[in-house]
Amino acid sequence: MEFKADALLLRAVDYGENDKIVTLLTADRGKISASLKGVKKAGAKLRFAAQPFCFAEYVFASRANRNTVTSASLYDGFYALCEDVERYYAAAVVADVCDKVALEGMQAGPLLVAAVSALEALCSDEPLALVSFLLSALAFAGYPVETDACLVCGEVPSGRMRFSFGDGAFFCDACYPDATPASESTFRALRAAKGTGEATPDGIVRALRLLGAYFGRQVGAELPALAEYLRLVRGQGETA
Image 1 (cartoon, rainbow, N blue to C red):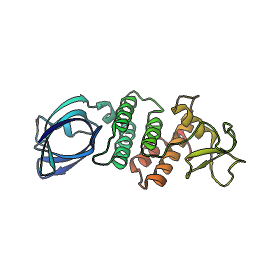
Image 2: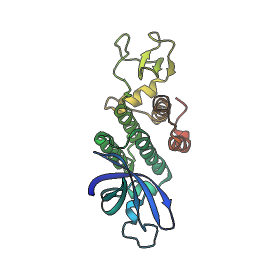
Image 3: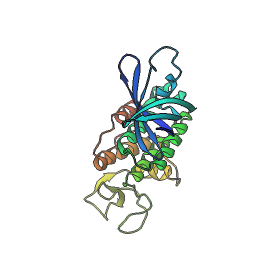
Image 4: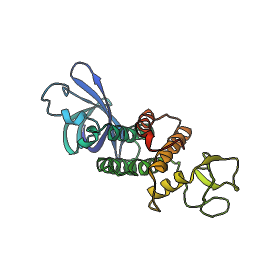
């Protein structure tokens, strides 16, 4: 059986002397694993299809539950992401999150759109690109982050505030004193990523730390690429 799918490459591992096994994210089939034959050879026609962050139309031959990529048409290689170490690790976070959230056979259109949009934004050094993506991915996984108002009093928190990992929401300090302390700059960065207000570089770093911790708590998986990215930019902010 042959089928086509627009797909984003999440990871690739060597297989034998000349082949690779790739994991791809698709809209209608979720994650797909497939082999790419001979792509480690110099001048291989499909070499691009096994490169990091490749977004292309892949054509698969499927036999006995094994997929082989037979051809591919490139949409975007996002080559700028591999030219800068910070961009690369930010993009690696996008791929890692997709890999840990998506399942085989699931509908993953919103996640694919969010991932491709994030990679495009990262190529342009959009400061809130990674925050926006993590919020979208968490919502897709069923763990949205509430930033509209305190769930107790209905007011927008300011000054000292709290974040509940169980509720995925911010609270006024007095409304939920047992929740985890959170900075106003973190809260503002998350709201800015949703289109309300502005964020500071410090707030963005803090927001990423908080989202990474929330992802780990809810999804049960660490994000080593995020830890490395934050290490690279830690001069811009402090721990959330």
